[in-house]
Image 1 (cartoon, rainbow, N blue to C red):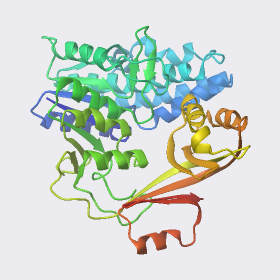
Image 2 (cartoon, rainbow, N blue to C red; image 1 turned 180 degrees about the horizontal axis):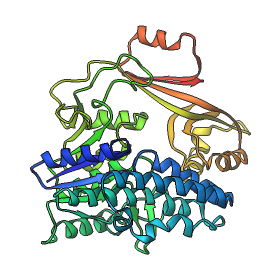
Image 3 (tube, rainbow, N blue to C red; image 1 turned 90 degrees about the vertical axis):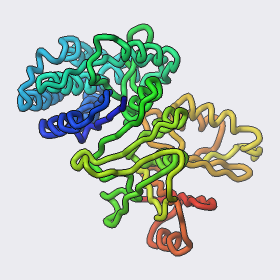
Length: 415
């Protein structure tokens, strides 16, 4: 069996879902088809969560009406009855919680934002069945068991494996299964999410649990490129990567795959393909244990909306010796994503993603250290550097911090 994962861009409209049908139809193996929310649905649901928190019921109603109309339009173009495909519980979820402004933000976020995947998979599964591909819709909050760390839930691997394997070995299961990416659930029935872009991780977990032959992520790019084509005009396809290189690229900010995706695949030596959904005949990129040739071009990875935080001990004590544990306890409690660390005798600097919890982290750190920070920065990571390349990157840019290792350079840049 194989696992196919389709991102939001690949199912953003009816034509995209029809293209998914053709890709699934050409496959001869048994499939688990993992589907993300359609288009920019997750962003739209995040805006609804903010409106709920602010108590703006008019905005909640208006934005949900627009989002529902978007899905109804896609379903209508596919000749799918959205009211029959999507349960009343899902359709009424947002309006049912619109007065919950005093609820935990993270709990509310997962309850609302998870609706996107529940709607997209219901439409896709209904369309596949209508077109003669018998498929079963899995409800991943019942199968992928997590803790209660909302917005960044940790998966209970043994419990999830047992439930997914039991569902897969159902004697009445058809050849194709459709499953939500990105979402799971607690033992008590609360929906959770695995972090933004977590559908890749879902696909990898399912592949691990079921010993899949391979995972294919269908994207709107030819494969993994050496730079973001939206930022660099001349990019090259990287045909092969090993698992280690893929993890490095993903963690540095490459948005093609989720950073957690690789570990479940590497553990069982399952290859990962990244292929273009618009041209399924193209081979794209393969990630595996032993590529036949190394990456021969420098790779540029931009990570936007970074914050550089520098902490200095107020009493001139040595930060690394006396304060490191406390600093990283604050970072962990506030769920800050660290992309770079640099230290001196009395200071430590960390570059983190901007997030809702940043002000709380700065307040907690400021109680013990002299804290300075810069917002709205970019982190540029280059793998495979040369002296000429380093010189050109630093021209006409304000570099706040740089870090060089044997093969990698990182620059924190003021925009």
